[in-house]
Image 1 (cartoon, rainbow, N blue to C red):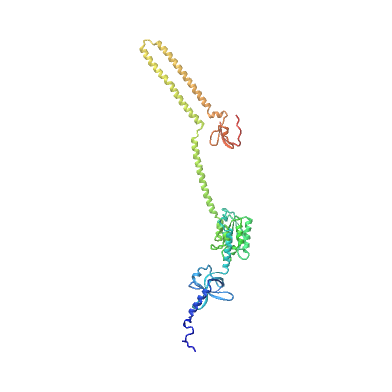
Image 2: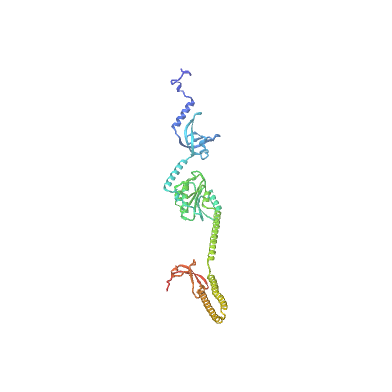
Length: 452
């Protein structure tokens, strides 16, 4: 018989404590089962005060305890609930303190999300290779749309948000609804059909494709290839507002413009009327100021040119004044020698009277010479006066106004340059015709051949 104090055949070194056993099994499990994805249903979910999650992951035939520590749990984008079907990425381990077999969960997602995401990435890669996401094929939205189309469900809250936003920002716009289901079986085909209908009718300037937020499964219709191609082939620029700001679908990438929400899509499609009116008012003020500056410049130029322009009557008056001055100078020049001669004669007469006792004969001769000189000077002055009058008459005869009164006309171009040769007329041309009674503008439609 063996007593309790007797060792086994293997010695003390072969005896393991429970802790050592559980730790060895835990290490064996972790080495044998690397980090892997496991699917199941959540039950007995507990959110501890420490922030750790404790739950049981089960299927129809088995279950396993699971734990997700606080640091990892914070990265999950949804709140797990009892009965949720999920997929967890976990390490198979053993909780040594109790000897419980459990999963240490590193990541969690809703069941099926992984397959959907893989399908999403596959379709995105395919359409990217085809160029459907290229920026150079994106179209600009019209600046002044007259009618906006909406592809969504008539019962969707997104429709009310879009209509409210459009009515507030641009009440003058017309709205056309292309109703369609936005989730559920067959919804992708219906959405694509609604987009194609709007494109064929071509009755709208902008097309808004929208729906409210939801899970990846709820938004999956907008990740369908048929919807993507319908948007790409649309003849109308498309604004896509699906889900919330963090939601991205294939439709967002294909659309001409992606909006974070349906309301934002409406804001992008219609600029507020008040903004346009304010901008137009500012443009009108700028245009008015520009016209005023141009008119002021032209008025100043007109005044300067009018100051430089001298009328024919003023030119004639100036010539008359100059002729009068010349006449006065001529008269002064004619009378001055006579006065000098008379003075000299008187002096000579005085000297003669003193030098000769009898100067009557010489005086008579001198008187006769004086008379002859006066007659000559008078005759010459008369001739000068006649010549001056003749020149004045000729000047009056050659005045432009007298020429015009005889039936002649002055022909000038729009700049005021007087035309003297028929070759200077280049029809079609507008000319200024000046007659005795005034001026008028004439249009030369065709060239005529001048004759000698």
